[in-house]
Image (spheres, helix red, strand yellow):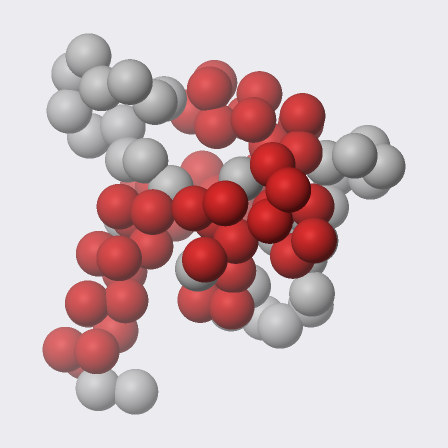
Length: 85
């Protein structure tokens, strides 16, 4: 993957999960964690695509990009790491 495409992907992902870079931004890490916990219906700490579609639609739209290791699920730490980019 070219660096330009990777950069664009990272920007799209960061925007999709509500970055916390700006002070006073509506979303922050605690809010994302709370939304993750609410969307994780079985409470296993892993957000599947189906759970994301139901509870975190912006994450669902970018699920394949966020699930870089292709395990079929996301963790809250993965989402926080993507936010930090």
